[in-house]
Length: 386
Ligand SMILES: Cc1cc2nc3c(=O)[nH]c(=O)nc-3n(C[C@H](O)[C@H](O)[C@H](O)COP(=O)(O)OP(=O)(O)OC[C@H]3O[C@@H](n4cnc5c(N)ncnc54)[C@H](O)[C@@H]3O)c2cc1C
Image 1 (cartoon, rainbow, N blue to C red):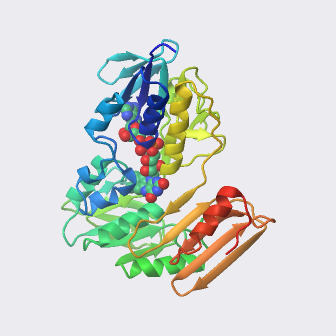
Image 2: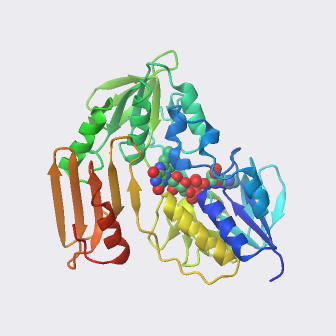
Image 3: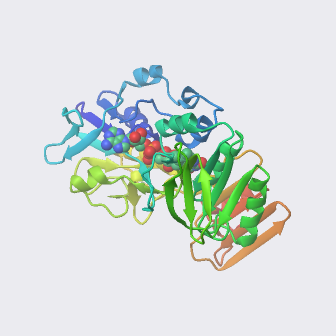
């Protein structure tokens, strides 16, 4: 094949894995990664460690300049793509420059979802997705201050624990009546809540946010349904993410919730692939690191001409809070034939299985000893043997 130009929009895990996989199969073509961030590829999943000051941004960098040079991958930072001309096979940068491509990958990730409550636009309300967000949050944390985290999912809980560890008084507001209500039953939620309360995190469960108001000196008041209000120096909303589909929609690509891709990660447009948090494979929207990595690898190989047959990624997550062990695998909303639930003190387990005993979804809290057996059953389809 003649040398070509492979353009990748997005320098996160999907983009960088794609660039690596492309280079492994094609030594000669030009690879250009365009990212709107000022940072090199970093461990987005560890941003909490920048928020609480355990690490500087540099501590999260995953590839140094020498690696890009060695791989002959050009990384252009602060380069925002604001349009794609599919018939002309070019991308347009925000500054006006137009770049031709032979193969284009959209690896633009996802954006935090901000529920439309009054006050969501206030300065005291923030979200955490990028390194810039983490640096800003770190700067805005007031010693001995107060923070309300809206949303008690895995990310919100991690952030709450990180901030509580710095001496900030943190309250998590969660609409469901118990934590991780989609994954665990009320007993499991109570075990997790107890562990986090011992780390200094307070909770308002079954509590909806009506709005946020300014209360002077840059502080805010979070108004809850039921009449209570919580004052906070900082309000962080952690209410999930939405795939970033703007560029794809504007270019006329097929988009469901994410950018629709086939088993080779190809979109509906010739010469355009998508991978990671922005992509939707069948009904699968993932939103986690290992899926972004696998999809990026598949897309990069496919763009270099390999035959690729991506079939989905097993969902696995671990809560990254010291001394608070939580592990989730599979889909807790999947149909199941039987379930096993177990609770003893600070240890909780819930496993959903099909008729043959294969794991459809499972959650462990406190004690992760069963993790290996669950991974084996989920990955191989063999019956789960505790
Ligand atoms: C705080 C936090 C903790 C997390 N913890 C976990 C965890 O424990 N486990 C887990 O599996 N997952 C976790 N995740 C999710 C995980 O980080 C994502 O699933 C993963 O980063 C997705 O990778 P991606 O490459 O698809 O997108 P991203 O990493 O979001 O990269 C996309 C990049 O594209 C850039 N971009 C977007 N639009 C443009 C444009 N028009 N022009 C140029 N560049 C553009 C973005 O700025 C970004 O740099 C966490 C996420 C966060 C924020």
